[in-house]
Image (tube, rainbow, N blue to C red):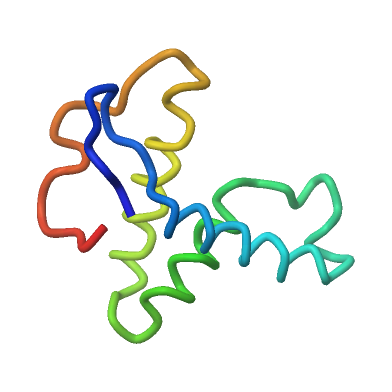
Length: 92
């Protein structure tokens, strides 16, 4: 889900497709389509749950959501994810 590039960690096409599927599913519901519910953590959590259902604990999924959020938003806020943030055995 994360590729280490010369520009730093970036998400893969597989991750981006999973998030787009999750957003598409969420937008089908009028409750989740409202502006106040448009938080990146929601489709990220849904995408990770769809990919890792039954394989990861809630705590692991939560940690993965936060990691993916950091990787995805780092270019927009002008910083790279912290060194070592994407290391370890997280199956991403």
